[in-house]
Length: 383
Image 1 (tube, rainbow, N blue to C red):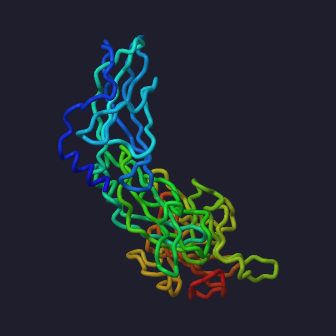
Image 2: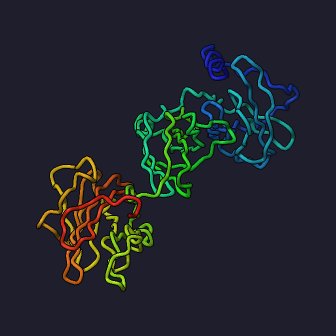
Image 3: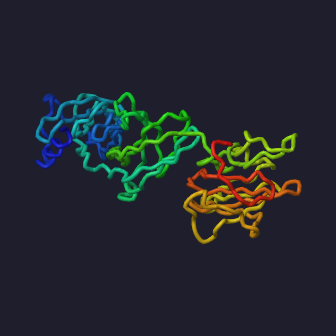
């Protein structure tokens, strides 16, 4: 394979310039270009970059005519002229050669000594993300992975790339043909929200780590998930990020007929409204997210202030006291109970935080539509 043969060539040594393909170069008084560096273009296939960008310090001289770029595919082969440019950058499309150097050419055709040599060595790639998991959402998937690649070498870590592809549910396999793989996006975080997905259509996901040189790690193990409409895993953004999606109302019980409409359960609404139950606040001082009661009759408390709960169904009865109008920090796994007083009647609702991102909170929720009844049932599929 290409990577193995390249490593074997590197082991043979990196000394020696080889021979240029042109032997008629004139002597030049120009200094050689300095600080030749490079960045690879990730392709989605580790070890096979889509191209390479070379960058070097510009030679400051009125007699400079341009630059010549030389490359070779092995440490024992001769250097050949790869291209010429008047800029101090050069983009070589496709899988790059093993080694490159640059010279400066003057207006009379003379050529300087060579710059430093750069070697494209895929062994510098970061480790693959060790794990990948997800949370199903309505027309979206929240993905999170181990941050081991960034932590292994923070100075060389650049970002993550998140890919998706179809999933064959009948055969239990991801469709990995090149024309089926899509780049969902890039992020410096260890989480990503894939949106605009079709409910009920399963997809596979994989994530790779990119170094500052552009080396792409091996992908994480592939993970599949299916977006779905549900009362579980509701996503609400921070008001400071997206006000229109930052508020939540458990139940619209203020209809003209005096009864709540079952079709108006679990409403994600504008956080500036006064009739919502709560909105999510992003505290600038430490980037934490907080649940803020909004409606004048709403108050909140932690279901258990000492520990997380394993599931929403663990919240059986609403506590009789201990509610407050103060905001409470959203913490994954912890449960929160709401007491809503409207027109002299109490309604109880609960939520369990599933995940806390940098810009949003994901939670499961339940509500009791029977006035004064503290027994909390899980609402599924909006019914």
